[in-house]
Image (tube, rainbow, N blue to C red; front, top):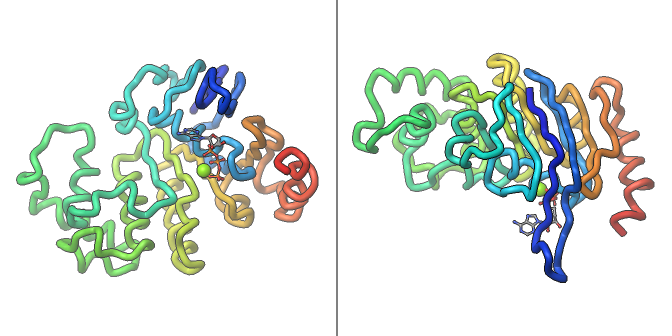
Length: 254
Ligand SMILES: Nc1ncnc2c1ncn2[C@@H]1O[C@H](COP(=O)(O)OP(=O)(O)OP(=O)(O)O)[C@@H](O)[C@H]1O
Ligand SMILES: [Mg+2]
């Protein structure tokens, strides 16, 4: 479970360009559940995930993951507990390394290693099995550099790498937004399968209302860094969400 307490964050603090993203923001996220975060552009969704992952420091606030206060942990140390998949398929993977090397890096996260002895023979079979389950033919491209893969293939690899060590928390920031509808569906189904199988507490940002409802247990809508809707996904209709965007949020973002 994840608790966010008293989170405040301003960018360009103290300047005329100051942007207040969060002011005493609190959130409790249940264990082994997928929580979808939706909301208009600029409402603070990515900033929240960046703060959780440690890539942006808040002005104040505490983050407690499974009873441990991780607020002062570096991004690198948090990455042992937190998996991430970004919107941009080139992030989350090392483009100049092969599929095999990328998977091995993810597998050895947190351990000391050298690239030369990264990929051991007996682990290759394990990676092949994982890749086969994606059904994208990546198991035949083990020695292909990731930069030569399509966006969908990279995103699949990124998802597999982010979940390989069964993180305590998985952060998905519009991870299917750059994909075509079919590939997006494959990745969403795979995401669900992995988080169900490994029981990973997940926060998923999406602008796709259908996906947000279908693949999550709980929907949270943010607007200007505040929670304006928080309810079980199974009781939420797409039309209801769109209506809020159309009416309630309109004046505030216009
Ligand atoms: N690193 C940064 N430096 C300065 N300002 C930032 C930074 N990151 C975000 N912001 C600002 O903070 C606000 C919230 O941005 P954020 O990226 O969290 O929005 P978002 O909800 O993810 O939007 P979108 O749906 O467009 O991805 C915006 O005004 C944005 O310009
Ligand atoms: Mg964003």
